[in-house]
Length: 537
Image 1 (cartoon, rainbow, N blue to C red):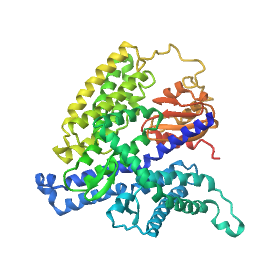
Image 2: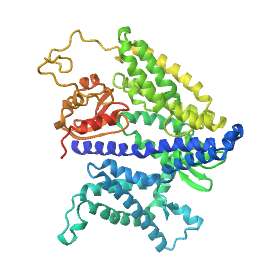
Image 3: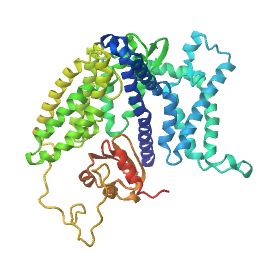
Image 4: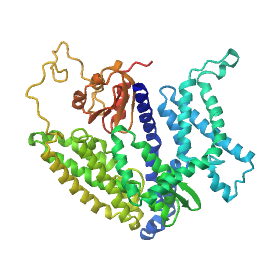
């Protein structure tokens, strides 16, 4: 039972991590689409006539079209990214097989509908089955859910058949070559089942979305709070993807096309001239403007409170830590470097933080702020708020953020002093270094090791690996945006205190084998450096 639970945790965390590759592309494409569409719109060019010149128009149109890459091909990107991320070896074959499986599934759906005599132009048939053009094939638009299913199936097939041995006469088709072949066969069979089950399943999803919609502004409140509460265990990506890309987050018609998912609706609106309809506005309540109260105001206020509550002699040491956390939050929309400074010392304070984030979503929804996109940072505010005109009500965001700054600052300052919380700069300093502390001991000139190159100028990958328990303690190693994700032989061998001395923000031990080390934005470089020191196979 324990092994099954650990395996499930590992799989769910790995699945959530695979979403990051297409989501990162989506965030970039969203910025390109936002800048291109806003600076080529009549509302902006009428006020800035020089932007009407052919050169500017071509550049901004090109930017908008480039931004459509992720939006137009989002499902197939997920179908490829999931097996790519879950594969331990031969990742290129896994991604290629993901595309093959996705195409095979949709061609099989097309075959079923054609054989059944479904009229692809009939409005009732289109509505019943959800027919749409998918990679140039008239198929059923299963959206992100279909892509995730393809990705999971292909990753399992890749794991099972990557080393498949065939009889001599068929040896050419064995090994890695067999993975896309079996993916095409299995997904083609599954594609025949989709028209039988999808109408019912899609009805259930739509009912869930309508149920959330009936909660009004409380839907975004529970969404925002839930995302923060799931963040420590790394499963928030799955919740976010559901709302961004499926009917749970809303659905509606934009420029005559049916679109599902809050983020999809928002991007479709950017590419479609005209004011947003009700479905787009309601769906956008689940997007970045809800985060801005806490990201642009609240968490910086908490950081200032932690700074003022630190011992005076410790403030210069923690200043860089807090400033880098604020920059990551405000500019990059990455909150873990700040959140994990108080999560472990006061989980109840983190729960209050989750409620305040939810209230930020609720407030933005009540006031009708319409900014959208994914990150909730200052870039989103400028590109999708300020540049889009006053209809987005971007001018309300600084006011809301200022209120949240004050609330967080006074709440955190009161909590830290009232309960003597050990936030940065308040830890008791040891009088003397431990004599056997490998980090502090001064080696003799004869035994001193040559200076090691630090990762990103800060992290000692060799020492971090040693604090994890050495290469022999690591079963699997991966990373998401801010944290190392590992399964280890024995979590008790992971030295949490030493990892924090080496620059880690925090350590999470989910069970005896599943460990996460929160590094920050440079986690990819740290993971790559550690991976080179772990024996392959």
